[in-house]
Amino acid sequence: MAEKIRHNPLLLFALGFLLGGVGLYFKIPYATVLFLGLVALAVFFESPYVSVLCGVFGYIFLPDILTLLLLYGTFGLYVFRRFFRPSTPFVAAGHEAIAYVYFLFMIIQTVTSLLLFGSLRDLAIHTGGMFLMILVINEATEAESLHKLFSAVTVAATLLALIGIAQYVIGVDIQAEWVDTSSNAEIRARAYSLFGNPNIFAEYLVMVMPLTVATFWTTKRDGVRLLFVAMFLVQLAALFMTMSRGGWVGLAFAALVFVWIVRKELLLLAIPLSGIGMFFIPETFVSRFLTIFNFRDSSTSYRFKIWEITEELIRDHFLVGVGLGHQPFKLIFEQYIRTMPIFHAHNSYIEIFAELGVVGFVLFLLFMGSIFVNLIRYPLRSEDPYIRIFGASLTASFCGMLLHGMFENIFYMTKITTTFWLLLAFTYCLVRICKQRRASAHSEKRMISHGEQSFI
Image (cartoon, rainbow, N blue to C red; front, side, top):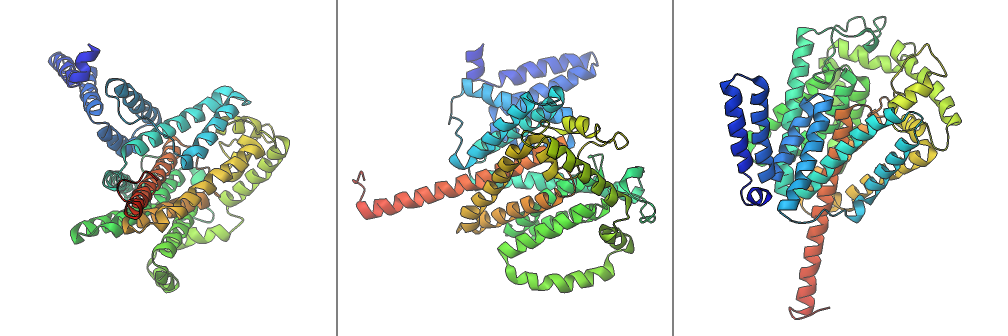
């Protein structure tokens, strides 16, 4: 049977068609789902890149458990396929090593956690994200295939933004803890799309909007460029409607980084455009932004209190932390103050310090630093404008994400953690492409210098 599948994987399609037909005849909904699933399985088996493309586009729309099932299932099918169709082996390049070292450290912190099963939850999320990273860097080996993945992320973000805008316009209910009504009485809605929380939705938009800008910037056809401009404006409107101050600041910083890298002279327009924009931005948004400087705002004072208690927790678990994930953190945090039930520290840096200890925190900083070093050494120095622009967009994405991480825990939710690993995969893809091109250019120079018969 295995030999038959190896020669004709579409036998899986035939099996799916048979089971689906039986299900439809007897009107069994689950059989219909099974039918569609088997069809997808056959297609994914036949074309791994299609499975990666669908995964990159679709994970963000699914509930968390289905997101993990998609990531684990796609990776498992990808590995299974290699038994039948051996191809290029998995290769971890030197510049990617620290990601695997950090992942190994997270495994250690899970095993030694003060709440093992709580840490397993976060380890499972990071594992799914790492599986996606491995899939992307092994399939998107050329700029053209990588561009399709960038476009998939842009389209997905736009659809989510449209959902968020609809929520804001309709006026969905907001939870009391999302806004201090004493200083933001005019706020009646906050967009959260499919994320369940406006701040998390804002995190996602800050991470992916620079990719939309890069896609627009590198597109040559005017009609397509206008389409991507429209997508960016939709995403920007949705970000405003999240009412997330951290998201606004994160995007502003990401924009400054992108413009600084790509076209510094445009920074001269930043101040006058900001001043003009103040006259057109509705007062609701301006008032919300200004509450950043109002330390009596409940959400601001709430964060300061959390950070103060977390500092005590860090001092007591300085070396190795409490264990990976928000659940061990929550368990220990509430031993310090039981009247403040929280899920995380609302700051990625002190959250990671509390979870992983000083060793893990230093390793995390090295991990983040290595990302920027790789971007600066390779994509940002590339002679290919396309590679350089997308390198700038990823640099901006990580900068915006890390700044926003000062106000939220970016590794708390499944979709955001997965998006981080996806951005990391894009970075490693660009670095690999740059290295391949440099190696090819170097080989050509040696060939010219020493002749075709040289073995030097």
